Image (cartoon, rainbow, N blue to C red; front, side):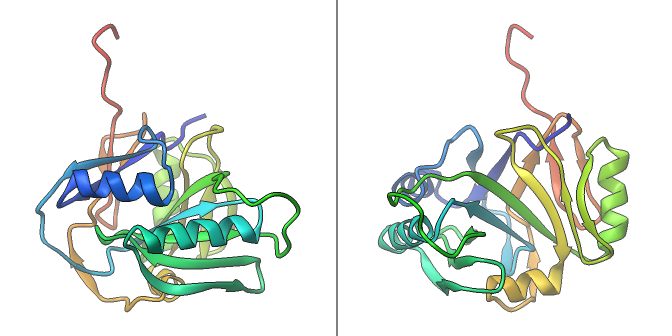
Amino acid sequence: MNSIDSVTLEVADPTAAARFYSDAFGLDRERVRLRPSDEPTSGFRGFTLSLVTSQPGDVDALHRAALDAGATQLKPAEKSLWGYGGVVQAPDGTVWQLVTSTKKNTGPVTRTIDEIVLLLGVEDVKATKQFYVERGLTVGKSFGGKYVEFAGDPGSIKLSLYKRKALAKVAGVPVEGGGSHRIALVSPIGPFTDPDGFVCEAPERKPDE
């Protein structure tokens, strides 16, 4: 099945960003990569990354570690209709949702991440869904013109589409923003640029391939 293998965040200081993501989330550098960029960007970049965990205690642990490492709190971790979660902004500007669908702890607290989800805020969910389907992704869930979730291989980055205005509200930031998105998707379905300006790159070939 075609999937999003990884994402590359474009940051002003890759060394500082790598230190943050190691201290805050212990992220696998093969799934969330970093590269230097000084492309102009302002306000909401049109996407969020979500770290999905098994229980509220894990969310709290990640949330606390992120703030200790230098993140800014956008929304405190708290219960909601759908589960439990909070939102932080990394020093490089990336917005991270820390979430779980459960409301009670069922085991020892860890910082184990079950899934990474990339949510793109788009102008036309139906049109962008069709764009990605035509390039080989398979729809897992779809709720009309409001939300789409694509299926993927285990261990891949789950890609979802949401209305830009709605995603900004979830993230706790103003919807206005411009310039570079400061992120690139990496997938066998690339390279291309989607209708909202998000870039997808093909994976780099290894020397023996």
